[in-house]
Length: 329
Image (cartoon, rainbow, N blue to C red; front, top):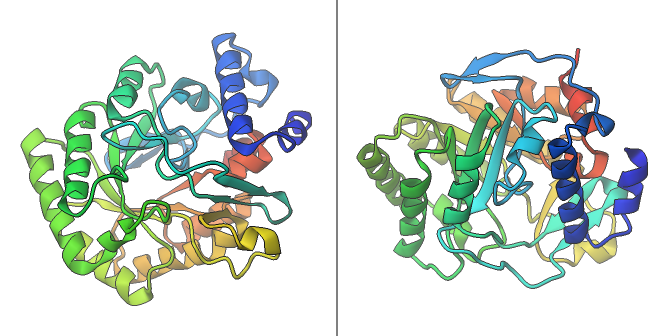
């Protein structure tokens, strides 16, 4: 496995991402995934949010944007998967290059911009999945949508995805769609929540709804968001998305690149937000994500108050063996 990871380092990041996931798919179909990854030893089944999770470790949105690799990723031993971010209409995203891997600091900078094949394509893949574990869907707004159109984008996604998603995450925190983070502002967020509540009631969706928030919000803003969520029918929070704060990066060239930072430089910041959320509300469900590169990082998220934990950059940099290292005894 380490041999393949070293080869992928010399490939353009998006090409390497595609090749690696297509390879997983190929091995899954041949029932040879054990060649890359030993079977996860410990499957500590959990009942959380009224659903059964094989374990508390899942994939973060962005790894499988279009649901093309659900069965292969599920076979690696994750306790759950989150696919997306998906938008109502297909979109290319931002111009390339738009991903920059920083192996020396275990981090990635991306400015992808919700590149995806659209909600209808994802729905079709969800219909075909064989994986029986929990699959959440992360939804976003098209870049071409503005103002209230963005709220309508989320509602359209809910309308189309609700029958096939075990939970839904509303992504208001990508730094790569202009002004999307304005949805963290109180009035904007109130309008979004009210609209989502009406749509959820209309389609009779009884499963969890999460908001994915930014690590760059002030503590006061996070506290406001917690208050709004706990007084609504929104289930909980995914904390957090990538950060635009690059002060901890030592690579001067990458510091100049626009985009969100994921991986190790995000770990402390995102974990602090989980602790803040938990200090404000002891029972709000939290999915922790951001910077998990080891079992110690995973446990830090849980100890801070996360109910579940997701990985993305750690999986990209360290490979499938990280799953076993984290969830086994």
